[in-house]
Image (cartoon, rainbow, N blue to C red; front, side, top):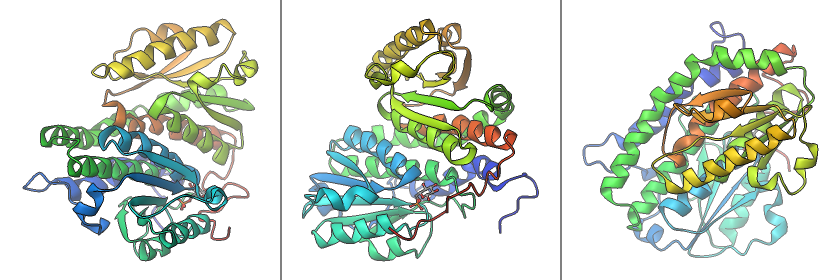
Length: 375
Ligand code: BG6
């Protein structure tokens, strides 16, 4: 069992291990003399990858939230249409998957029955399959055509944290790799993104260094019964996982929603009794991100008019959000496609501190297991 002596629980230790997990996952694949991205374990020829016309991402729980960020990354960088499925639902939609398509199965344990079953079905239908997993030699890694290992180290706590950020780093690397193969990404752009990927290590440390601010926030809110997490575009999966983390470890009812979807129903719930976590970061170098940011500011002002309490994630240097939100957690600036890797960290910390203050078994939440090996 990994050493928890320095930390009271595996969960908080694993949250703090994320810079090292990211380093071990990213560096061996990018720090190469020729500047190439090394993903040999994918074991699918570049020519075949070049002709891939559609990608299916299939996973469960937190791993599926990583897959949701992968959809944005691959559609943006490789211009390939991507679908994301719950592994437990995959077989019911009679997936029209076949040759010329790639299916990616994300599973920390490599043993989740829904996911291993979905991989078998995709292979039977003629799709090439890749597993992204944290356990070398796991069932999914042995049975898929290729794999990309997250090198996050053993993840003991049932709620997934360091494996999740490592999964997103692997998905980004693969999106960049595929984008170069499909000549959608120039070598210069790839090199720039690799630099940004490596810069995440220090930025994650910066966020962790301010963990006490998140703990103080948890002190204010650990008694509430409901939470809503809102995020737009690639930040929507972050909202989903922030909500899942809180549900899993603190048993508080928490929902994740696309920010723009709140007006179609959930808005009826939003008043002073329902704290909102809103992801409102902005990559100023990306016009699309600026437009989405402006919509987030407008939505936040509307929720405040309804009496909501807002905890906002904003980019460092943002002077507008702190004037609107009740609390602001700052995130170091990063390209929008990489920002989920940073944004989830304070939400992981928040879920941990809330659960710890509620006196719960944060590493082994009731009714949950680390790998659901039956369908
Ligand atoms: C659940 C875990 O049982 O399985 C989640 O509680 C996890 O944390 C999900 O995300 C999927 O597990 P895996 O191993 O397939 O990524």
